[in-house]
Length: 171
Picture 1: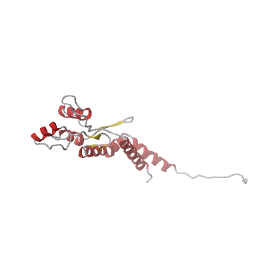
Picture 2: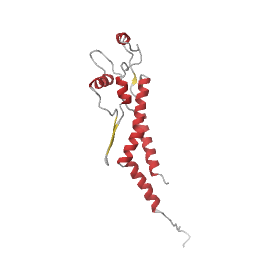
Picture 3: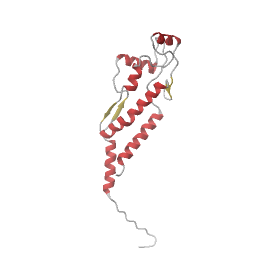
Picture 4: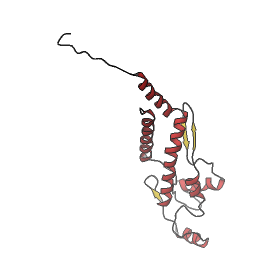
């Protein structure tokens, strides 16, 4: 061999590479994505919603507007808390948002998560719409209960990276 040449020999075992690729395929197939959305994303969204109600808003939707004096008096006359908690009177709205679960649909080409997963009844639908966009009569400012931001996207992407990495990991 000449002095200006380098010789390399690679000994490979394609079985390890195949196992890694099989793990990657499992992570991203219908069952893998279904599991990921159900065990990582759904619980994250429920926790964010629960915290949003506990803190009367958050970094995504902002702090909820204070209740008007008339509303506080009405709530007190009906046996509910006065000024707080905001967006919680009968508990129906909070229960629907926090405990409504999520619905995951996964196929070989598309996986989706819907939150909340249960279809709202008429009363819940009205309450969600009023919370999200407000109302003109009676005048009610928006106090959104659903929302996502860059923090949520970062969490989902990091969780997906972990899901894929763990699935493709060599034994």
